[in-house]
Image 1 (cartoon, rainbow, N blue to C red):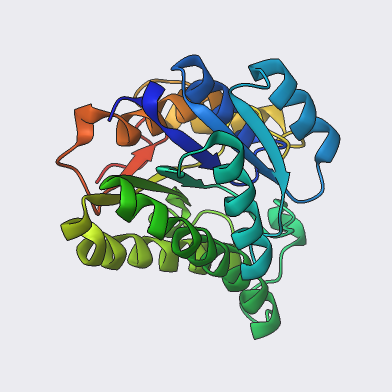
Image 2: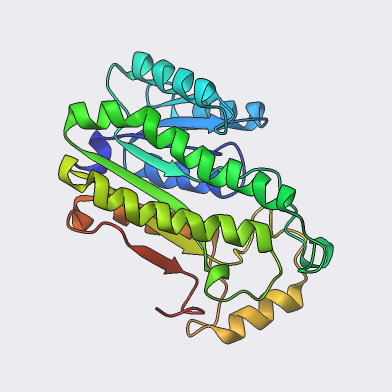
Amino acid sequence: MLIKDQIVLITGSGRGLGTDLARAFAREGARLVLNYRSSESAAQELATEIGADRAIAVRADVSDPKQVAGMVATAQAHFGAPITTVINNALPDFSFNGDARSKADGIGYTEFGAQFTGIIGGALNTIQATLPGMKSAGFGNIVNIGTNLFQNPVVPYHDYTAAKAALLSLTRTFASDLGPENIRVNMISGGLLRTTDASAATPEEVFDLIAGSTPLRRVTTPTEFADAALLFASPWSRAVTGQNLVVDGGLVMN
């Protein structure tokens, strides 16, 4: 199915990387469900920018299965067709500040639990809520947003990194389970992006250090990362599932 014929749900699309993902899919003609939890005005503005006939902003906390089910029902009623592509991008609250994160000798399971609830629970809820529609359409794409930190753990984001590593496992087991339904499940993993809300406070020397460590000699932008998501939603990757594509300028090589 061409991207222009798809209805795409992007979780956490009211801010940060989510807005770049939304604009990338909008550029290709997709109809969009812009999920937000607290960034209502930004999500509504983005929907207006894309066009009322092609985008709807819907609030839901993805860690709550009832809210997710309501969001999916609202979107299907609005467009008159099921969601066929899901981009699991939403994050629970997290401070991307290595100096402020709990170290190995002090972190507790409460911190891990919060990340697992938001990242794994959120992905599980959105996938399960949209599966009936994908099955009825005979087609589906699920793209989970990961991180290169579990391959290159240079920052002590223990809880966040563990949850994203678990999301890769979910990606692969769900790919195996859902493949016979013609539903593909993949992951795209990035590192530090230049620049998002999460990386806005990053010192210039850190960007320069990362740029110098990549073959491309630059830090990946949110727009470049978002464009890679189009690959997994397009017919060009119709035989690809269960994969993790690292988009970080070659900093991490598989």
